[in-house]
Structure formats: C-alpha cells, structure tokens
Amino acid sequence: MHVIVRNLNKKFGSFHAAKDVSFDIKKGKLIGLLGPSGGGKTTILRMLAGLEIPCSGDILFHGKSVINSAPQERGIGFVFQNYALFRHMTVFQNIAFGLTIQKKDKKTIANKVNALLELTGLQGLENRYPHQLSGGQRQRVAFARALAPEPQLLLLDEPFAAIDAKVRKELRTWLKEMIQRLGITSIFVTHDQEEAIEIADEIIIINQGRVEQVGTPMQIYKHPRSAFVANFIGESNTIRNIEEWKGFSKFTGLGAAMVRPENVEVLTHEEVVRADTLPRGVVSNVIFKGSNWQVEVNIEGTTVLAYRPLEKKEISVGEEVNVVIHQLHFFDEDKANIVKTSFNKSTHKPLAIYI
Image 1 (cartoon, helix red, strand yellow):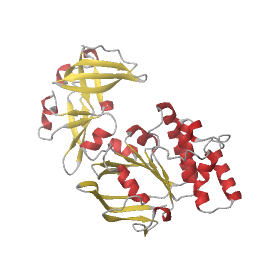
Image 2 (cartoon, one colour; image 1 turned 120 degrees about the vertical axis):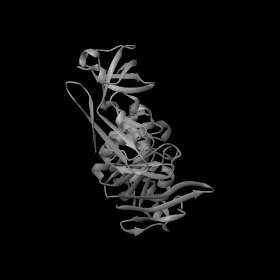
Image 3 (spheres, one colour; image 1 turned 45 degrees about the vertical axis):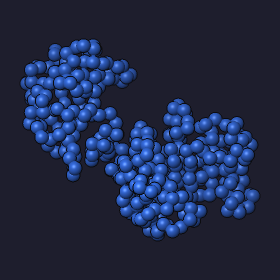
Image 4 (cartoon, rainbow, N blue to C red; image 1 turned 180 degrees about the horizontal axis):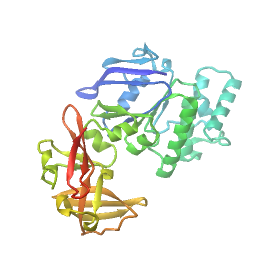
C-alpha cells in the first residue's frame, strides 16, 4: 500500500498533538516513527488506523482518501503495545479472530492460521492460552492475528516495549525478515533510536507533534537537519565554546557545534608532531567497549566523548591529551552546516572546509 499523509492536525483541547504532519510512504517499506515520549507518534498512528479523527488534513491509501472511512474499511492490521490478546481464547482462536469476523469458512481459517503459526514459529502452541506463553511468544501471536486478514498496511505501536532486552533484539530481526518476505507496508512507533536504526528502511523523526526529518537511518545519522535530530540520533557532543579552542577561532558566531564521537580523535603527546596547535584536555573517564575505548575528555570546561582504537596505546584517567576534530555540525533555523577539517600533517593545524 502506498500511503500519503498531508497536513494532518490533531488537537486534544488546547494540546496540539499533531502539527501539519506530512509524509509519503512507498509500498512495501518498513517505516519507523521515532521520537521522544509524548511527541505525537501514537496519535499519528491512531489517525492512520481510523481510531482518532484528525482536525484537518488528509490520509490517502493508494491515492484514495480514507479520512472518512471506518477502521474496518481501511485494510489495516494493528499490533498494540500490550498485545491486547483475548485471554479466554487459545493461540489458534486469537489468530483466527479477524477471519471469523470476516465469516471465512472453517477450512480457509484453518489453512490460514496454520500457515501463520509456521511463519511466526508458533507451531505446537496453538492450543495454549496467552498466560501460558512467554512475552516473545505473545507478541508473535499478536503479529499473526494482525496479519491473518491479509491487511495492506501493518501498524505497530511500540511492539517490543513489553519484552526483555534479549528477546527484543531477536524479535527485531525476525520482524524485519518477515515483513521483507511478505512485502507489506508497515509503520512502527518507537522511542528507541537503536531499534529504529536497526530495522527501519526509513525513519520519520517526530518531535512535539511535528515532522523534524524523513530519511534512511544513514541519511539522518550523517546529515541531521536540526540540533534536535543530531542529539536524538546516536551519540553526540554539544560544544558551545568551540571558538575558544586552540585552532578554532574562525568559528566565532556560528553558535554551538555538534560533534559525533567517531569524528573525535584523542592523541597522546607522543602521537602528535606539534601539540601546541591542538586543543588540549584531561581524560576524565575511560570505558572498555569491546571494539574500542570510550574516552571522555574535559576541554575548556566541556566534556567530549570520543572513541579510541584498541590497537593504540591505552590512556588513563587524569592524563593530558590532545584532540583532533574531523567534522562538526552547526545549526541555524534554516539549515545544517557541516564543517570538515583537514590538518597540516607537519603542524596538525586545522584548516576548515565548509560543505
């Protein structure tokens, strides 16, 4: 299903939950609605499902407006955060529920449910009740029930929120593979950036009811369009006094800089030729992360997070180090400015290149 949302608004009293929301989702894509709690994600999802009525705007499925269509007429499967399984029904009966409502014959229902039991890895559990299942199994039943009526659009509201971390990671992979196999357009709500980056084809960043940015996980991570997006996706350092750092006086007036840890290089004095041309700081924390060292350095009153390769000499808390910044972001109201810095190899003096 091709989904178009245009200028969608929703108010609850004086609270503006969705503000002029617009986006376009191509058929078969797995989309993450990502943002902080209370940002409007679930409200948008519920309007797509027909469970909330917009104050203004339009929703089109395959080019046809569904703004006045009832939920059962929209061809949607909905997976709720708390599973919403029927406790008095078996796994088989839960999955068959939508098909029963559609008045399908018993043979059709049995064939469809058995196929979904196999697809979701629930074979042998069809006669159990929800209380006899693990959290991961209950979530799979919820997925299977939503898929049984063959919806054109699958909506998932925080689908992994009630599951422990280990099972959550397993289900992420399973969900992505299943949706790719079925080719069904899917939208899931989450406030977990790792979850969205890992499984979404595209991410829609929602903040205070507005769309901040739409793009692939890589596009949003590497080219954030606002300070909010830059700080919400991935690790980042906000440096408000970068112009006071050695070698960065030319950045006066640009405002706060955002720097990713992977663009920060921490060097001992032995590793640089001219240490006097680089910002200098003191290591305040070092954490072994398996693939690298996570290093925190205090520079001119600002703590900067960086990654240091394991093959380099280990550094200690309290040690004086030099810092090389390879890329920065500056933001204003209209755009994001990316600044890459090249360094003179003999002096380590930074030379700014604006992009």
